[in-house]
Image 1 (cartoon, rainbow, N blue to C red):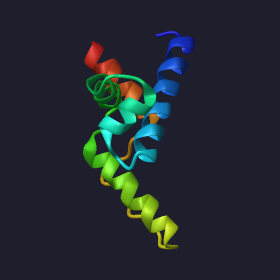
Image 2: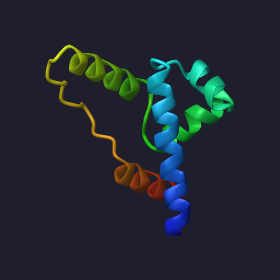
Image 3: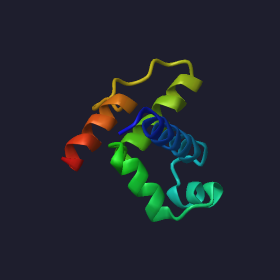
Length: 92
């Protein structure tokens, strides 16, 4: 995958993840806000290894930080580079 395509893909994932978090984890509201179908939103996030459990964990940590408490340690770390490796393995 070219650097350009990877950059577009990573931007799309970060944008959609941000929209989901702004919509408090509601995939249907996030999809409506982004102007896309809910199934497409879920597919994009799933391609990067992000599901409901990871979204919930991010929301809990955001609330803990707002209260001045330390965030919980993630059960499984999700990063753009790690998600790209998962997608590359699926494609192979």
